[in-house]
Image 1 (cartoon, rainbow, N blue to C red):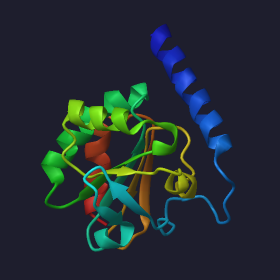
Image 2 (cartoon, rainbow, N blue to C red; image 1 turned 45 degrees about the vertical axis):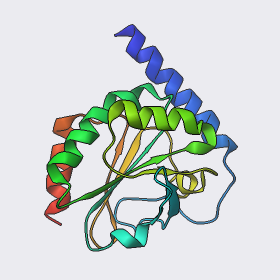
Image 3 (spheres, rainbow, N blue to C red; image 1 turned 135 degrees about the vertical axis):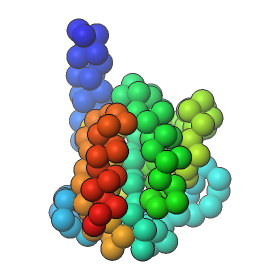
Length: 170
């Protein structure tokens, strides 16, 4: 228990340090009930993904890094969630590549068998727009592009299931 607490403290402190290095940006933080910030990011597959292309279907946006312990804990639950709901919900994993290495991102995606798009936030602009602290942080966006919910920290199957059920009822 002590080790997990220390690990969480280290992740939070590192996340805060990284966040403080991000450039200031006009606008307000992404909040539940507000329009989700737009993004256009390249995926590990070389394709460009935009938030607009997902309109009409609920979208889960998970922010993570390969060195993040809680991200590793959460990855299997996200894979199971995607397999269960892939016909009704889109899911993208946004790697904060500005503070990560592409080789590590590729290794993580391969090790956990991520079946959904892995997007590269190379300048941390999308993370800044969503005001990501700490990681992992997951946004649930409804079919109209409105933020329906937010999960801070690693989510387990039960928490994800509950949030997805609510998202699908919107």
